Length: 140
Image (cartoon, rainbow, N blue to C red; front, side, top):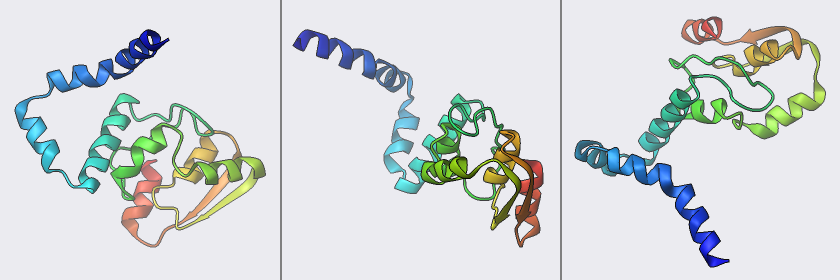
């Protein structure tokens, strides 16, 4: 029983230990100096890159996300895994489909563009005050 547990643990940690071996001393020192916010963004972008910028699971599966976000790069990893604001996605899913999805304060348009992609809304209307945020929605 314990041997099987140890075997599973070794298998689970194998990719992490391999990455640690391949990390340069410079990278390790940089990681040690990161703030929590910096680490969150780094891990999020690494996840984005591993997913090739595409939502891999859930309601918006297949949605291609723009790496150059206005809202914040720290959410991209969770978005790519289909876990970003999952409670909201579940709520939206229970209400869909929509003839028109209205998104006030749309940021990068994750929900509006995602629902159009998932064919859960016929059309979407996004409101954002700044031109920069409007550009981000259009790019998505």
